[in-house]
Length: 134
Image (tube, helix red, strand yellow):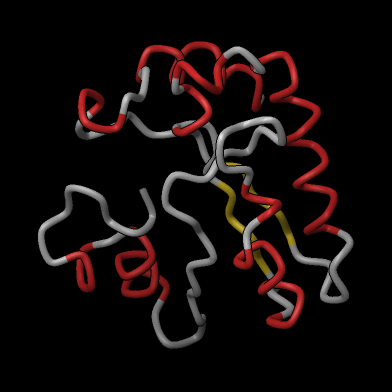
């Protein structure tokens, strides 16, 4: 989602680009997201096992935005939904423990722009997983 799936001119219109434009020069927005990654540790592509997961440790961010849940809703991942809250808490804690002690903000998962192509259950994202984040 943050990469700009289904977005025209993603370099300019992706979520990180739009956030950078909104916040201005006083902030540096960096995208550490991974397309297709899951919050779920038992998911088909756990974010915590990607190279991008380690990058913020060297960056030392002041603020971390996490928008999980969309890829967790895929049929092969939703079977592990009972782990979602605990895995989410562990991810938040891993970022809060960085040397910069950033403020961590959880964003509500977004509806998939093309669920048929990506095999994402938007209803599960909005109903079940978003509730677990709260």
